[in-house]
Amino acid sequence: MKCNNCGFENKESAKFCSKCGQSLEYVPPKEGSSNSKLIIAALIIVIVILAGSIGYFALNNMQSGDSQLQASTSSDNTSVSAGESGDSQGATTQSISKTESETKDWELIGSYSGSGSGSQSISVPAGEIMIKLSAYPIKNYATNHLYVTGSNGESAGVDWGSTSAVETRSNSLSYSSSSPQTFTIDYYETVSWQVEFYRYQ
Image (cartoon, rainbow, N blue to C red; front, side, top):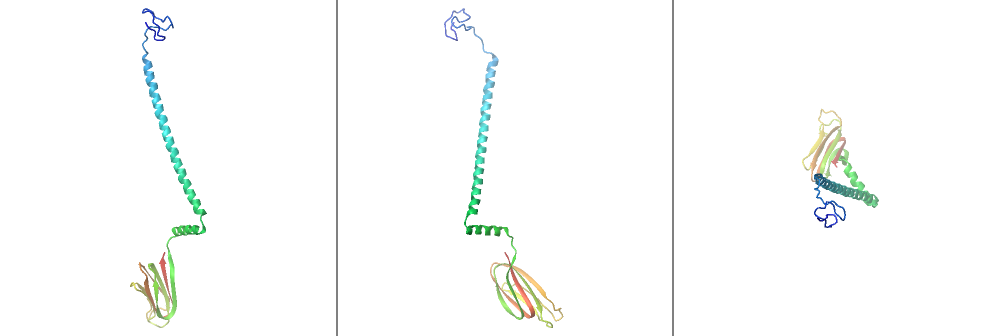
């Protein structure tokens, strides 16, 4: 019988190798050994998968952090460049920021006043326009007035009848136009009058 350990040929009846002393009897493998090997192999596979997953997520997090850092650095550099630019560029930036932060409001674009009787024409730019007018009449007249009339048909005014109290009267009008308009201010027998033009901007 051949020894599985050293290969020496022994007698068929020998139970131990004459050369190395190894048992020559066949010993079947224990059932638990194959199960143990399968469990160990399964554990190794699970560990490898876990290690790969952890490595994958760690790499993605590192790349994401690098991207955010680069974006932040780029933004900081842009801010620094804007701050270190010349005076003219700085003025432009401040002007834009100011325009964006401010809200629109009515701004006076023309003011006209006088007394007595007469008329005059005023050119008013396009946009959203508001006109305010007021006048004080000469006493004892029934035809005292102040009228403002535009080429677009808009008009407003104040007047007094023969029984009206002699006092200051006011009026106003608002309109919107995409083109400039011409307004005529007509006044008659007034002590004083005033017409103001505002544009919403």
